[in-house]
Length: 72
Image 1: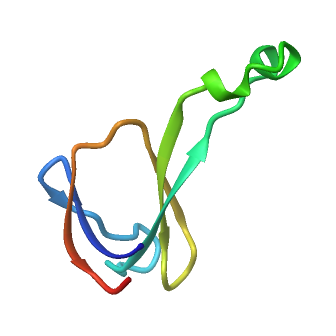
Image 2: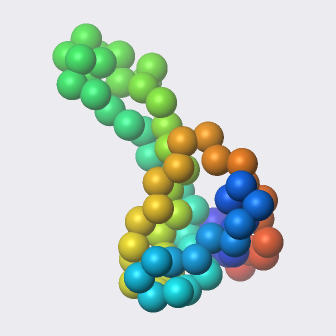
């Protein structure tokens, strides 16, 4: 999904280039212990927002998020 987002009542903007369009993805946060026991599926996931201009990454655990616009 590509678009503009609000996280905790503040518009998400890139700290590096001031862009406000992001690719939204999910990423699993693997740990060595869970991987050792083959339990990676039990690790938490994060929402990752990738700046569409400079590719800077923003990681959030359980964000209070609203989508402003989407160009899916």
